[in-house]
Length: 117
Length: 109
Image 1 (tube, rainbow over the protein chains, first blue to last red):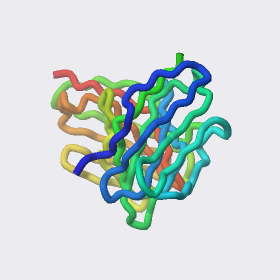
Image 2: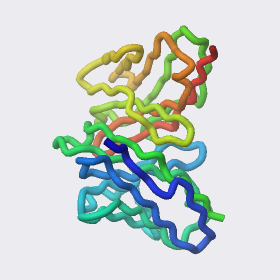
Image 3: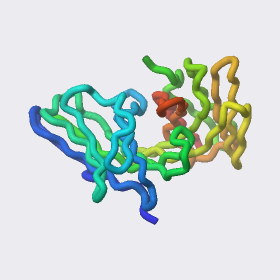
Image 4: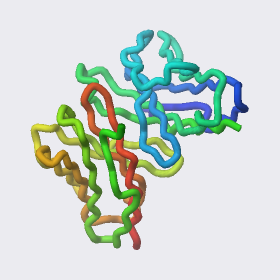
């Protein structure tokens, strides 16, 4: 049973370009979370999605960031017009559906390290 | 606003001794707490959790203690092993997950 997969593992973008980060949850998991870890900081919640539905995006910056989890395919975190401050590690986690999202164990992917030049 | 705090960025312990990692939180509405372990270049992996209705949960060498009145959480690892060297994040949940900034544990052989 493959774990959570993220790609690419490393992504380099120039200022103003777009970054697309992909996350495939564990088999059987229909909940996806995205987190960002800035240098010297902990993991910060960004967004929580179910298939075709954004449940909680309270941690997402209001501009340039968007996320989706389509019916088919991976979840995508999209950052438009990247700036140097977007350089961070972006982690995706998935959890199964047991009815209590705050206690469901989250399984993390290896992360995507975004570097903005 | 950091709702979950790990005030010790690093900790070194001799192999075989006890490692104690601490975590403080500010929101009394948190009802579930977790510890994650993270190796370099990998995502965090779940280690152990505790519900707010308990004050202790044990799993092998790992024990988590919760002091609700002090809003304090700790993870005890005994005996510590070199393979335990990693960054440990505590997390608390209310309507979403809040993570601490992590404590880097080094277990010296």
